[in-house]
Image (cartoon, rainbow, N blue to C red):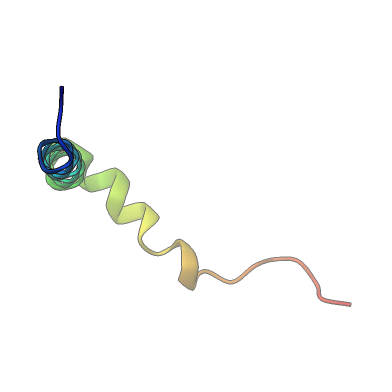
Length: 51
């Protein structure tokens, strides 16, 4: 039977591995061009008119 501290440790390990996986994906050299294009999206003006 699994006690609460072991379960907490496994959940912490799972979240840590997920975070490291996302960080590796984000900083992987082949994704650089795509992410560079996406970083400016919030700063672009919209072409729609506000009525």
